[in-house]
Image (cartoon, rainbow, N blue to C red; front, side, top):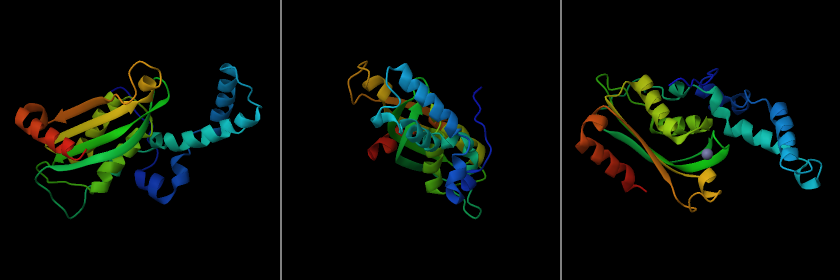
Length: 213
Ligand code: ZN
């Protein structure tokens, strides 16, 4: 992928220890000025009582929604030092919300992320698997890339033998604008290793991913 996020801080620094730092890359003053301009652009009066605080609120919301730009997803997936694993590890029903980079509107759904540890048996905490989806969602995104980036982060952090990422989401840029009826969803998948090569293994992981929803 040619797209590279700016990585300046690790996830533990950014999310656990100092949540404010996670948002530090978002220039709130600049976002505020842009939203004021946007309100004028759509024919609103930015001094109208109802919207006078809107630029500040949007800047605050964006600092949170785009906090993942500053976080290295691989740093989220620290291998457990004393644990080794062998079989499939699958975390499903990981709820997430992201922002489509084409329209800056949300897409909201759930992810299933599975991997089979590689020769070294490296595994990570189950909550870390959910966290990497969260970190990669908090960026301007497209769902097709999100599945690949989750798989890339797992491969880099854990060197697994196989990876499966399945995401289903509703895109408000589709459902709000009348292109499709509300409730229609988009499914994207990324399969690597045995899940790419072996239809039986792929069918099995797909069945397990869906069993929870
Ligand atoms: Zn869109």
